[in-house]
Image (cartoon, rainbow, N blue to C red; front, side, top):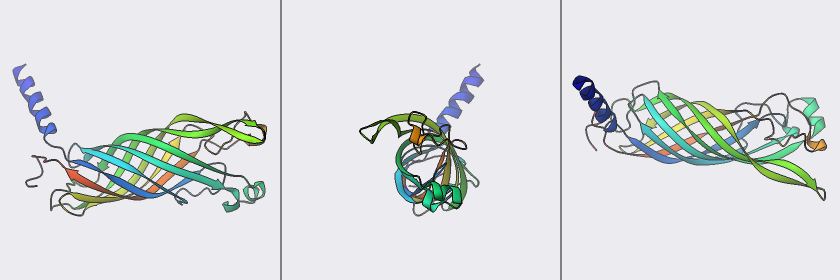
Length: 223
């Protein structure tokens, strides 16, 4: 038991002092994949951005949390098929997303070291997002209400060292949702009940710039 407690204490101590924190901003573009407009998976058409925080457990894995404001839109005039062009629907929505999950680095990476200065990575998160949906029509005007739902962000990226305390990243991630009303389709309003062919998706593609702080004794030797 004493040996187990010693090993556990050593592990906790090592993990506690083996962190580099990262905090910063990211900017880029968002796009929607659903029942209105284009169906391209990565073709940003709206400016989007947010803030990010990372807690590096080791040179391979980082816990990550971020907030993203994602304006999205779709216009059937931009679609590649004749049916959507003739239908001529369009919409605009704004999603406010809070997400948490993991980044996994393909290479051992430490922005505070002159060793490996860049790495590709994959991103896997769970997100909660807020958006608006139609509720009724009053006096010829559509009345909206706010809804919350869950998404699964999955993405790939590459990040690298700029200096001892600065790093950059470029990533693209698609959000898999469990709803089909981000583009305002609803059975509550006949004119907007145009059905669908599955749940909606939305994506973010862009750059981030983060400031790093903390002194990980296990893999950084100097500030």
